[in-house]
Length: 186
Image (tube, rainbow, N blue to C red; front, side, top):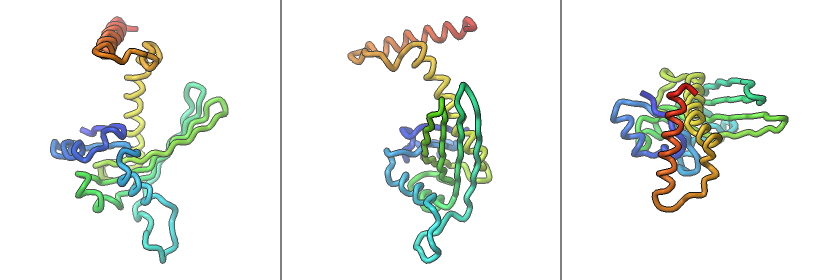
C-alpha cells in the first residue's frame, strides 16, 4: 500500500510507522520541513561548473502531461532523483526518491505556475517518473472529490461557526446529507 499525503503528513514519525508497517509513502514537502525542502531544492538547482562542490543528480527522471478540462489547460511536469536517498534515509525512513512537481494552469488566459517538492519511499524501479506523477495526481483527485462537494455544495469554507461542538455537529450533518444523497444515486 502506498499512502499519499499533503505536507501536513510529511513527518519523520509518520514515515517510520508506514515503513515499519510494510507500506510506502509519497508526501508533498513544503515549509513545515524547511531543511528537507532546502535539500530537495538543492538537488534540482541548475547545473554548476564541474569545479563547483555540488554536482547534478546522476539519475534524473522526467515526465509530463498536458490536459484540457473544464475550460482550462493544465500542464504537469515531474523531475525525480534518488541521489539523496543515502543522505536522507537515516532521518526519513525508507526515503528512496525526491521529486519536483510543476503545475501550470491556464484559465481564461490567466496563467498560474506552482512548484512543489515531494519525498517517497518508492524506488525508481517501483515508481518511474510517470508513475510518480500519477500518484501525485491521484492524491489530488481524491482530495478534490472529498472536499469539492463540501466546499461548493455545502459552502463549508464560508461557515462562521467556530465555537464549542458546533463545527463538528455541522460537519456530521453535512456528511449525513452527502451520504444519503450519494446512496440515493444523485
